[in-house]
Length: 186
Image (cartoon, rainbow, N blue to C red; front, side, top):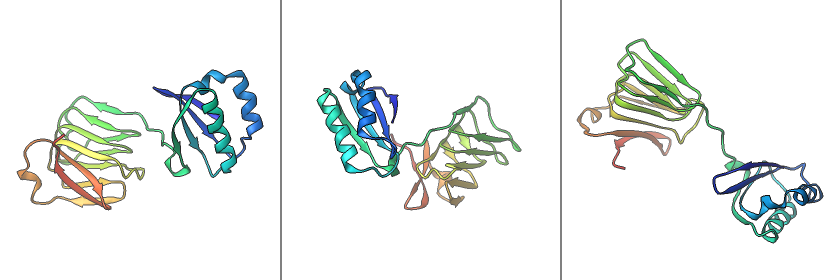
């Protein structure tokens, strides 16, 4: 079992090697951990008897189980956000292990590749690839999107005729496996 503090309590990650007996020994020394709001994260398929015993022990200690995350919902660690405080000129390339924030324009002939989101506080005219590692929930946000090519995860969109008439910030996201560009209202 691994533990990690969260804003409102604690996250307990259980795995198949854990047993009720081993967990009881740990909790005897650190019972105060269970008297909080608890999120249970299951690293793989576990016997229901183990999960039920853990929930019962948390409630007996005065804690509350807020969430039970199945194996497919284990949170992916986000990379570092890169902030570029200038306009990207033609020939420039930015690679980010997390999100990329550009405080300026991204000119034609430049490229931004990020494993998470891309945010441009200006006009996006260059190529943008958000979710480069397969993150389908990534998005591209800009004051104006005039890019000839947008990519999110494995999806690709080429420039259309409607983007040039938009006024105000725009966002591109995956919906049904396709990139949808729309005005950003909120």
